[in-house]
View 1: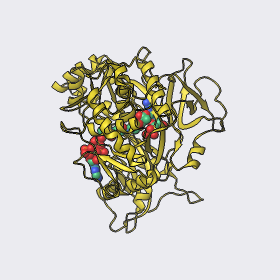
View 2 (view 1 turned 90 degrees about the horizontal axis):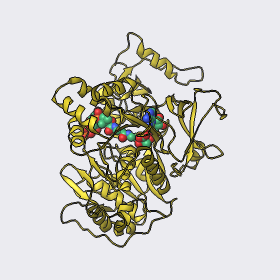
View 3 (view 1 turned 60 degrees about the vertical axis):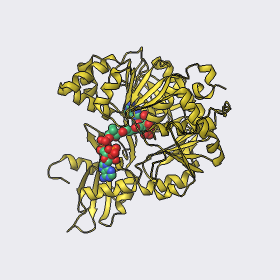
View 4 (view 1 turned 180 degrees about the vertical axis):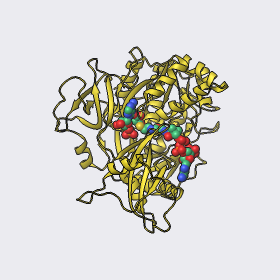
Length: 500
Ligand code: MCA
Ligand code: AMP
């Protein structure tokens, strides 16, 4: 069985120990150093006796922690350090980690401080040892457990086996000609598939490098691409912000245009990149951004190939090893070219189930093993997929983050000033969609303010789940069965006379 990270699991075979593996600002780790730091941590992770949580700040410590867990064959649960208390308590209870890995200076919230802690050091004096060559665990062994939102209820832990990670990264290697010579630049968070699996394990599996910007900035993107970066990964919000800088025609814009034009590959994913932004980026740089389509549960499903024809607004054909079909509501295949149906996928790239949720896992698959994505699409005769929408209106994609309306509604209802609440998404040029809260105040005389409700949700769940707009209503529109009619709400927001 090929190791998941050949350059780290079996260094002599890779022969690139001196090559830079990761860089965060001034801090650079070669393959040899990363292997030694992770090697020294490995026995402590194995000794913890169960899966481990990783306090996934955008840092070298997170990379060392995840690599060490993978070398140990122990599943890692990456945690968003900005997660609020309720969501974090849910994830910790559900995933029951045996220990938490964090940088020595990280201050952990009480629910994590109660766990055994393994400090991850990357300083010059940090314990470092390659240790014995680790044995590659079976392909079905969980590599990561990544929490992802559904329409209702708290996030579910998607169990990603090593097989899926390897298969998806190898399919991207095939599609993009991705090699050990590539230097990937990005600023994505390291607790989701995009930033962690594609953005860190991708380069490490190829024996290439990743430079993480710490936080997104057009200056950082321009600097790193001009200085040897060959690929850029980002969510549409980031590309939108790059397009804005390019449109300014200032010094940064000029430098950015040159840097983007010089890159080998510019890739957008996690949500749709609007055709308008595609066009603006192309006009300013002469380069096409290509899109790929994935999901936490499936890793990558489709992607425009590096040697393919980029067609703005499409996410390309299925990747190698991925079977993709479109089905009607009743599960039958759609008929006719360009017909719209739900995307279902099958392949080695799929997750193995939701942690502790056999009910949700069973509901996610058809009897013959196809995964129901909930995304609606058309497929062109040449196989290019165009995503046209989502089955569930209660899922919102904001800044590339998937957010369930139900979890925010529950959090809002816990605020003493809220009697009733409904949450919808509405188009936003920067975020793709923004979260809108419709609230019936407990006391119409003193309704809770928008900032207060945003803070309340940020504190309980996560800052990216906070409502950006709050409307106060006397009552929520309901049908005869008492169900909230969200379409009536969104129609109301487009009409005159409604405000926060
Ligand atoms: C703001 N902040 C707050 C509050 N308001 N904190 C507490 N309480 C509040 N009320 C903080 C935020 O934490 C953040 O802190 C800062 O203020 C700004 O937040 P915000 O405005 O929400 O975000 P932004 O800075 O504008 O971020 C835009 C972004 C981000 C950089 C594009 O949305 C992002 O990183 N998106 C990537 C999502 C992603 O990776 N998705 C992949 C999942 P601070 O400034 O300290 O950060 S999808 C996936 O994995 C599948 C497989 C796929 O296909 O890829
Ligand atoms: P997540 O569950 O956070 O992994 O988000 C997965 C969802 O993001 C998919 O089901 C799609 O709705 C959406 N998505 C990912 N990539 C793209 C893309 N390139 N274009 C449109 N939607 C996308």
